[in-house]
Length: 231
View 1 (tube, rainbow, N blue to C red):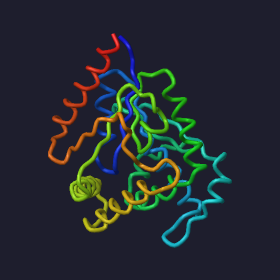
View 2 (cartoon, helix red, strand yellow):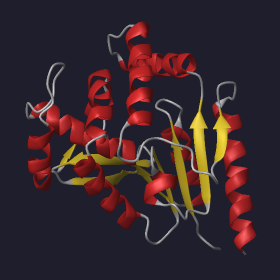
View 3 (cartoon, helix red, strand yellow):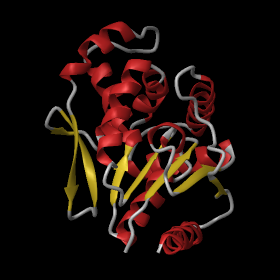
């Protein structure tokens, strides 16, 4: 059976990673969470005093990029690959609201994007990959056979993110989560390097009123139709 490249882009907290994991598992494809890569670099910057609420030393981060090694290791118990930073599993540490508050600023740095995009292209060179992020269909894989663009209202996305953080045990306020979602939307859409935009040939999926099952089944049908069209 022919293998394709599936690029999933969209705003933060639209469930890109969730459906990408489901899709990769159903198709037997490799799943790559590019958002986790940017979060890991952000986590590195935070731990090394390069970014805080009042300052961001992007030049120092760029200088230290060769010291940042990112990798994914499949966790059979979870059913997906977790991200490792310099040999340490940081999958849970990078999912906090604190990391979320800085990640869009880090992702806007051109040298950071260049380093990670290069890695992402290598990960998907043999096809049979589902990759989600902000610029997968426009920059990383402009020739992907199936491109999706996920969207939902900011309020819907903030509520989903808020519930996710609360269930993890994080102490957060809904208004702070909403402000973070709105700020990330602005930064992601207005940065100079690879801003978040919908590829001309991407299929838009507004999941504001879709259940997880409805969303997955809809996207799985699109994937299977795309694969069948190549046979």
